[in-house]
Each structure stands twice: as structure tokens, then as C-alpha cells.
Image (cartoon, rainbow, N blue to C red; front, side, top):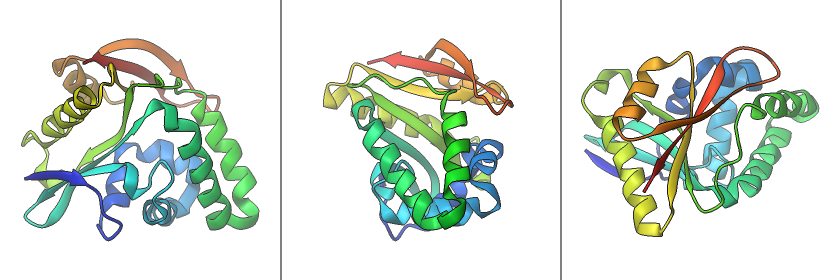
Length: 193
């Protein structure tokens, strides 16, 4: 098992990103969600871009991934993803961007100097083998090494297993929000490093 930055040529990352929150991503990006995520991944500059992804390589295949970026970059990354939305959806982009803004209200802005961890997902075939734990601990080590004071993440109230994992790894709930389209509530969790 090797944890490394994603490469533009990695395959399967869009499916893992989708697996991290399928209902939410389907609600925002619609039926074309996988093609959109793959496009933003290849573009590299947006939230789902390869430059913001860590992957776990097991035997030459991507078995897990997560998004990681410094909180101060959130606006720039969101703007780049919005550009991908416009390029991908064309005339329907305004509708997708409205849904994205409505859902975005559920997520507190990250601490400017902290690291945000998002979209963590492991392939079903390797779940329960400690890969998610290793990935989270790797992000915490990156935060510590870079001088970030905190790692933050959002977890759906519909995913209690994930919340238990994060609590076991030292994260604490710092707040809870809902988005304007209804559906799940999200808990912001933080771990000081």
C-alpha cells in the first residue's frame, strides 16, 4: 500500500469521489456526474482535480482517494470547478451552479491555514483493512509537517460509520448544518494537530 498524490492518468478516482457522497453529488451534478467528476479530475485545478487528491495505490491500482487542500484555497478551487461546470454542462450550467450553491450552504468555510479533508472513499473490495485510517493519519501528518493547526472535514449524519472512524482518530464535532435543498445534515469535525 502506497499513499501518494494523484496523477492525471490515474483511473477510477471519479468513481471513488462519487462513492464518498453519491446522493449529494447526484443531486448537484445530475445523471452525468461521473463524466463531470472525471473531467474536473483531469483539469486538475478544481476541487475534484488530481492536484487536490491523494490516492492509495494497492498492487498498481487506485484503491482509495481523498481530496485535501489548504482552507485558504477554497475560493480559488471552487471557481475552477465552476469553470469545469460551465465547460461540461453548457446551457445547463446555471442550473447546476444554483444547486451547487444551495448544497454548499451546508459546509462551513474551512480554516484558512488548516487542511480540509473531503471525499474520502475506499473501494469496496478493500474496506475494513485500515486503508481509510491510514489515509486520514497521512493527512494529519501532512498538516503537522506544513504547520497547519487543524484538519477539518464534513460528514453526513446519514453516515454514522464514518463519524465513528473520525472520532476514533481524534476528530471532534464542531457544528452541524443542513443545505437548502433538503436531505442530509452535515457535521463539521476538527482535529487539532
